[in-house]
Image 1 (cartoon, protein in one colour):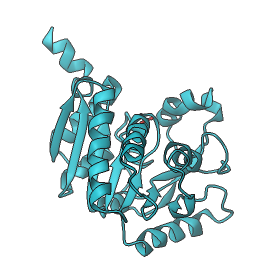
Image 2 (cartoon, helix red, strand yellow; image 1 turned 120 degrees about the vertical axis):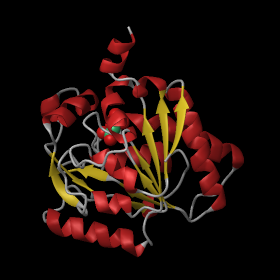
Image 3 (cartoon, rainbow, N blue to C red; image 1 turned 60 degrees about the horizontal axis):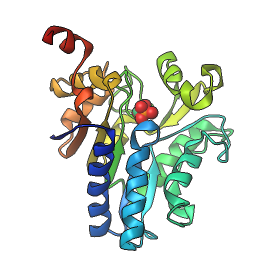
Length: 248
Ligand code: PGA
């Protein structure tokens, strides 16, 4: 794993967007796996600036969302379809025809999961997967304990994940209780992975990853078995409460 340590979130976004921009320049029909949430938002903003400044044509790329809430319509402001549309497609003036996002309103969620997995295969798999990490170590919405062989599936969101995402919805009770997420084995099939972590609340998860262990209790640690991972991490995400206590 390549580890790039940066001072703060802004520098993380700058670094990550530069990596993405170079990949997109090299491969105009890249299949890009896209994470959502607070972590990558600045990266997408900076990527959009770079793409517009260079007049790079991204009309041939495909994006594959990692996950979507169950029960939210696409035009709901907190749906992940809406997120990727407003962070990438709208500012780049791209048609969202090539945006793959699980359909969270499907009346057959199992069939939707199978269909999504097939859709990823049909576009040739993900070339570059952007990932964030949850404070409990989840990747996508693969919560602790998810089998590493899992494919796209429906998950019950943990209390801590709903609490963490309450900031977007105003109140935890508004956060959906279920989501569709690509599975851990789906993520592991990506040809390369760009993992972003910022903030001290991610430090326990980052520590588990960097310990080199591979442990289902910390889903992110599966990435220790992936051949091509770049981690861009802020300094504060490298220091757990326990570490800072011991330093005193
Ligand atoms: P965040 O979420 O970027 O909003 O902190 C990360 C995650 O849950 O994967």
